Image 1: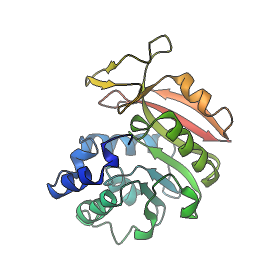
Image 2: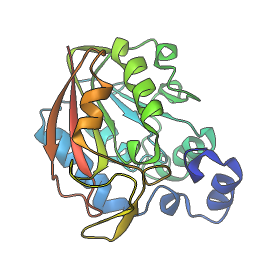
Image 3: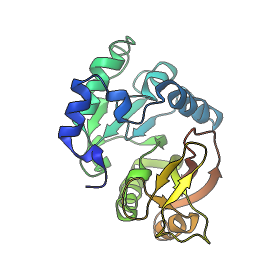
Length: 225
């Protein structure tokens, strides 16, 4: 498995103990607001259709659902347990369930975006690629592309290492001291790794870099061409 998120017993245990927010990394208010502010700053309008990839318990969703026109927020995650916990413990508490279609919250085992039957203007994958191998990231990008409108944008965070660094060595990321690895979560990558991934895919990369993430994750923009 790529990360502890892939273990349903770990997910169940966190939910049972009321720790679903901690399971997805904590910093609930800070990172949730950061995502919202970033997307609006990138031009997200209420009329746009957005896909939250790896939505977890809706750390971003609780802010995006009230902003977007009803029916314009979609969410996928590998864990149906975590999505249900987010629905029961976060969206109900925020009184958002009447605004959010439940059938637009979908558990996908392996990025089968075609099952959604929708196309998107924006997508965000915050702290998803940090848990995925390059092969899994490529699959995500390849399978997402047909569901993005031309010019549509995916924003994804990653732990970046310099092109001159030894990728086999562990790296510590400021300001939080998170340690990344070449072969397990948290994964790290160079910009060139992503250039290689999209070489035969209908994406163009816009490097954004620093965007205020408290754990030092950098941002990439993928534009559907």
